[in-house]
Amino acid sequence: MKNNSKKSEPKSQSQKSSIFANDNKNVAECVVLKSAGYPFDFELMENTLEITDKSLFEQYARDQWLGMEVNSDSYLFDQKIIPDFAFKVVCVRPENSIISEQTKIKIIIEDKKDSSLKSTKSDVKICDVVGQDNAKNKIKVIEKFLVEPESFGMWAPRNVLFYGHPGTGKTMLVKGLAGEVDVPLYLVKATSLIGEHVGDAASKIHDLYEKASKNSPSIIFIDEIDAIALHRSFQSLRGDVSEIVNALLTEMDGINENDSVITICATNNASSLDNAVRSRFEEEIEFKLPSDDERYEIFEKNISTLPLKHDLNLKKLVKVSKNMSGRDIKEKILKTALHHAIASDKDCVDMADIDYALNSSKIKVNDVKGMFE
Image (cartoon, rainbow, N blue to C red):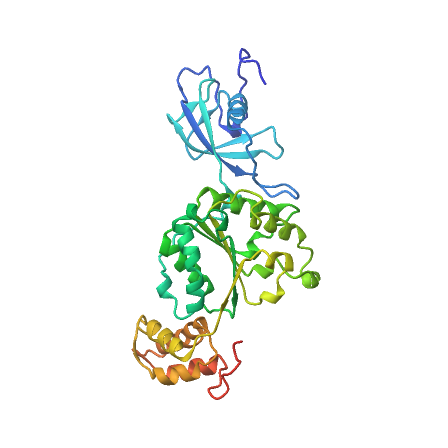
């Protein structure tokens, strides 16, 4: 660190610097910075810096840029790092002022590591999910726990597995649960937890649970859990996942304090899961394809929201959609039919548009069984 009695030296022209002794310039009271990275990509060099001690950084920055003139939206370069690392001046008070020994320098830390782990608030309710009465009944325990977590003690629910056909409402029911009791919901795709370097995955999983714990009671929903907790007999298909599995097991076992955090995972194929992970779920809830009456209700709800008029035979639609999920009904039939009607400059969706959707999706009316299993 430089001696405070040492006279400030002029900086390079690229810094647009001036000598602190210039009496015509104001002294900066406060300068707010954020990292801007390197001016060009350099192999094996990350474009971000981690500030471990803000007060230490402030002393370092003040010492390095003493006597420099700063303005909002300009840049300061850390010339002790090669190539020069840039910091953008977010604001300075007053403008066109000089950094002095008394200038407060603050750095904005952008938490990029956790940017994909933000909680969401759901406005969906459990009643919005059509069918799945067994699943709705079983999650009543979780609902009561999230309302009064302290009343469960050591008998609190912790880890639950949703399994079954894709598009049957697993994610929607979790959103409905979170919306019903108004708690933070962390919706995570399992693949987003996979890191590029050794230790990344474990760190992401720990950060996820740490965030959820701080905002408890809360729900963590990990979709496609088999992507990171694949059965060991299949691991050769996607490489070693022991690091991810071990980190996940640590959190699910409650070795770290995760009070009032419910973990709900989803998979289309429960048999593909690692046995160690699957054994941690105290409850496995199956999601089934909708019945005739449930498909009728799904069509009825979705048709009412179409932006065009409609002339559709619901009874026929129920028949041709046998063994289809709610998502298939909405995406493969109704949405395709609507888009066909719009493209044809029609003001009404009719059965001709439905026939187009069935043909486009290669769904045979007389051979629907098993098509989407």
